[in-house]
Image 1 (cartoon, helix red, strand yellow):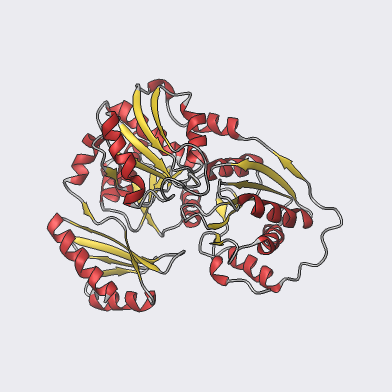
Image 2 (cartoon, rainbow, N blue to C red):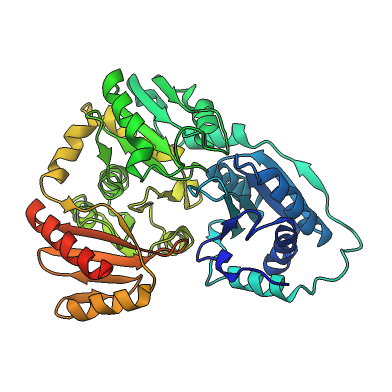
Length: 447
């Protein structure tokens, strides 16, 4: 059958519904998934997107037609889905398009926690089976669908990862963005000494208030203002499926993901001296420097949850962070979670008895970062080649896109896995140099 091959991405399957992803394709993906992972039963969750129920029905029909059972965990955040896969020792499919606009949907697929299907391992196998369309008749004994509620166990698990008794009373603003984060936060935060200010906790797949990606400044503007207006200690935001975490400090200032990774890494190393910490290659030097200063072992990795989870397991790393808000925890099945880092931030503020801004100020005074800048391009490979030639005198690394390292500044440029974009992250030793080099690199990318 004719299928748009671009929906089969590096970390998941994702496309516009119904133009790229419809019931027929979802059904075939269900059948192909069972064959690729040799599943006896499959955990299936979904976020609040409008197309979720339709895709669930088709996917579940494909899974059961192959003879496997469906464990339906219903509406859930992606980290609850990971918990369900881990505790049932089952593969799984999460129906979500993460932070993408409302017309998108897709599938995040677990082979066996913490190993996810990726473009290198499994996703292209599914593509080939779907395109070949040689499934034949359904199995003689079709699988069954049964519902399973794992929220209570999930809440107990994430609360076990912090010292609840050590938390001091805090005031926190949470913007759930009409995604799955509100349901999750409501269940967890009722057990904590927190005055909670709620923004958009009602799940709504039309995203009526703002988009689902808090990395975009327009989607967190209200949160930043509200933290200051409420005199809150901090503010938190989650993306649509709530597996990513974003924070705003007491000044109403957005906390870059690499600075948050550095701060959380230091907390883990205080409790686990000498542990390994994984960070992605886009990050500020603040991360490896702070990890070393705290007696830990920093390990750089390529971007992407499928790759970082595997590396964490292989290295037995205690914690990992990506600049885009993914935070991973050894004691949560090496998986990423949105809610756990929010709890660790509150534990950190309680431990140090200071404002979040006070913890950030030493980093802000030393490391000057551009943040992630996305540039639409037609030919990403040609742009990367131009950059490689222009900066040939630097230390170059092609682990993921192109990383360029000079003594006093560095950057990474990599193609998006989901859009026709190049993503730039740059850092320098002074704000003036950062601005100058950022503009210089952007000129080459746009030229």
